[in-house]
Length: 190
Image (cartoon, rainbow, N blue to C red; front, top):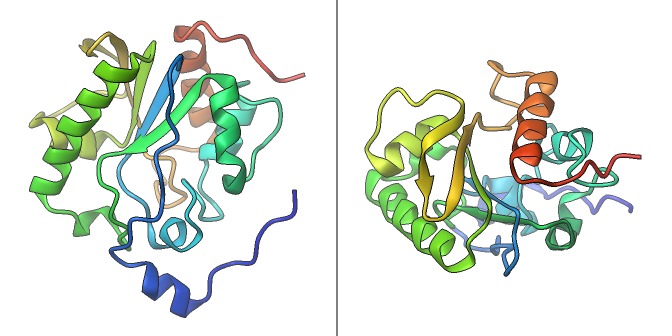
């Protein structure tokens, strides 16, 4: 698929505080990935993890969760593979630091209700700090957690943003592969 045109500076500015990135969710999910909130690039395009350099889409493919690397505009295809996407906060911002504690906590409560309703096998948070903020925790380690999110096995992974230099693509592929295996999904990589 050809990549749509990149948003202009004006489109990025206009995306601030927009709520244009819908949840990708439905029944029968194996994995529900939970992000923090859309960045301006995602807000301008209306798609999850849309900024070039974000490692979410390449890591999904390399971990065998999709048969090819999807473009963010193809995000609805994830439902075919048993994968859903949501976020703590729908409001687009330049950085997650612009979110209030109240917004993130309310988002954490909404995500709990969503997990109870849709009952994914695995709930996977992408952002340790935001996970801690949403649930009033400290010191959460990356990986499988002892708690559950409703009926779902609970994983907390690093934010796949290209700005997160503490983790590189091989780290994301290894972690996403572990999540895929925990959800009981076969590798879709040929």
